[in-house]
Length: 168
Image (cartoon, rainbow, N blue to C red):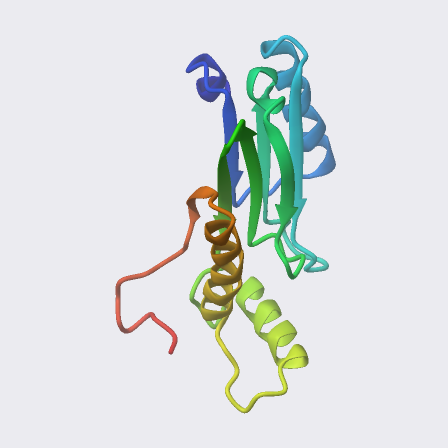
């Protein structure tokens, strides 16, 4: 965090954070001191009980926060992605930070997301968490594109290029 602040960055989006309440408060305090008090912070965390808290954190320095139009969390409340939209006059930019659970049948988060998907799906074909993330993001991005909003996505996709490790 100190390296990010020292680089004089105005917008911070961190993915796959595993913060407890003490860390959350500490990060906000550091930013408040180093950024001279004015910024817009927000964090989103998954709903998985009794597990390390994966999530996303966004902080926007005061010079940019006045352009903040809105923020939107993951449509399922799982903290796989979050979006902030900055608007200046007729131009808008949607910035997405994301975290996709690892492709592993032994990963607790993967198992939890699969359980949630099975409970909510009535189809014979149950999507993997990654395929569902892509579908949900497609809905978000299509909406922004239709509104003429530019967008950028980045974060931790947890993608593996090994065919043996991929799930179908």
